[in-house]
Image (cartoon, rainbow, N blue to C red; front, side, top):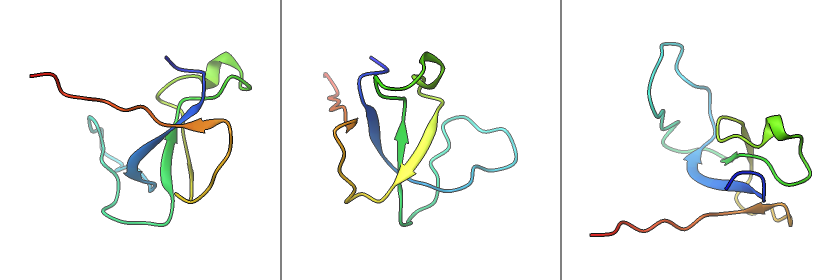
Length: 73
């Protein structure tokens, strides 16, 4: 699923903790939201969920999107 568009995430952008951590949540508030993955215009090495970028939530561009997830009961 990676590589179509960079995906908006609910996390605010901020520095990660120095100590190793699984699934860091980031700060409680901020200015920029996290973008993950890469779009189809990027090199393959950029199309990974570990790649993290940021922008203001009001920023619009045709290479940005989001993924809806649903919990199945």
